[in-house]
Amino acid sequence: MLRTEWVLCPFCGNKTRLKIRSDTELKNFPLYCPKCRQEILIKIKQFKVTVITEPDAKTQSR
Image 1 (cartoon, rainbow, N blue to C red):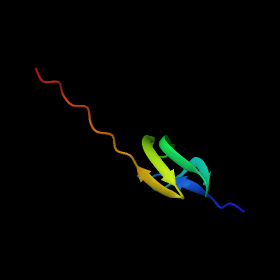
Image 2: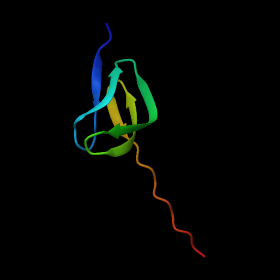
Image 3: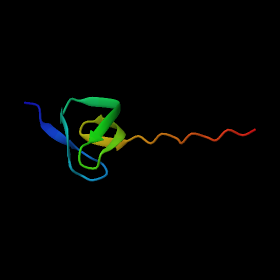
Image 4: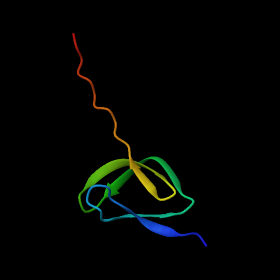
């Protein structure tokens, strides 16, 4: 039987509306937390949640 767990928000630690199984893999997934109202880009493999940080936009130089 496959194990399932709730995905927790990396910022506030509360449950999100997403439940994953042990064989679930996500890449570049936009996770939304209903409590802290933030959207975070994550990667999940074998219940390991990794936050993906995007580089900030560079200012244009003239």
